[in-house]
Image (cartoon, rainbow, N blue to C red; front, side, top):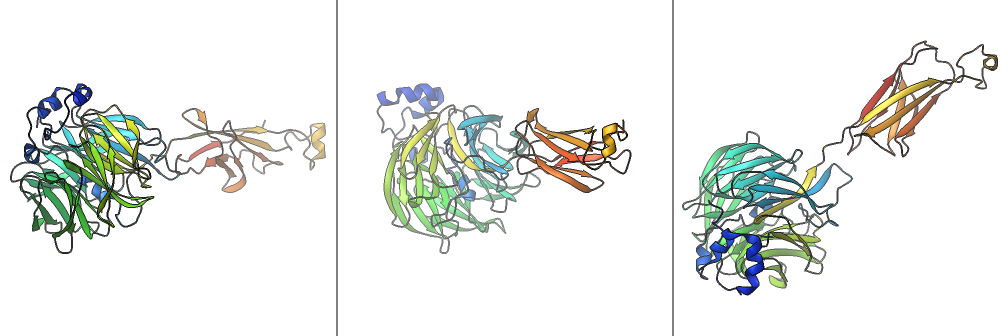
Length: 492
């Protein structure tokens, strides 16, 4: 797929109002816009995965905490535990993956991937990110600790959507060609272990929470394929859609929500009967969809790529409760772990809109992307930081209250020994950390490091051995690795 093959949009826009966005988007998107018609948009080549990739970490429509996080600096700050919240955004034009730290609202890394990256998904462990490269028929596997690609997996032609199974053992990738297929990747080997034929131009994929089924939206055949993940075969084909694109599933597995690009609606599938049980009208050209347990209750957020807004659905009533204007060509959607923010990728504005789910307004616009099409967000393990502990010892001469002869100099060091430890990381002192002092496995004392990283232990009296060794140890914590230091002071 070439960089100019941007999804076409119906011609329902004011040319003057689009000039600024065109300047940002570059020539490819401008050419893709020229001469399109309303019905042509339904048949347009689907670049984006529809953010079905988010469903593996989808927030329930009924209650439970979301498993993704947003991009605003005030949201998703680094946890006191061993994780931090990161956002991963595909840049179609730049062939890169942006890594954003939600605690600082900044891009902390840019990872080169394959050509024309579209869909992106994070494993449940948060240790790997899978990126579908539509231009070269591969999936890049990025390590979240080093922010680097550690494997490249050949799949089918024009891969777009990516979803990781709930147990993290399989990755499903839609290959968006006529008579399309789904490639099944074994995450332990990072190789394709099966290829499943589905419908025409598959665009989105999502797993049920128990991992037994995967739902694939087929954009041009206007149906949804249901894959039995145990047999890796299609067991049902659900019809009645009009350009089905994105998909999301409730964690109880009862419903799958599908965006109907051509009908401007969201269709609700019962996973028990494999039938459409209802529809909700939304904006024009719906693509990505995310669900969240917000402070206002369960909500579904639908990115409408033609009307440039987000429809907010209350699933309990099946009605749109708000419409939020965003950037140009919104495509992807993700929710913060606490459900307070939704992030929308605006492909032709090269931005991300951050929506507050209480007020349903855009509270921040993040720039610096290059045709961003998809985003996945989640908690990523923080590698513990290395530390260094140095230990010194000094004999303390003089009267200690027990050896009066010390005043005459008959005893050289009855005052005992002073052990001084210093704990640092990358040359900087670590304050407030516990340090334990021992000798021969006997605990002598413990201390807490001060603002200069210092901890002290005084060993009173004479030690029975002439050359005893002493050890200071920092046990480590969720953020810092343990460290030890040993000294064997000799008698003067």
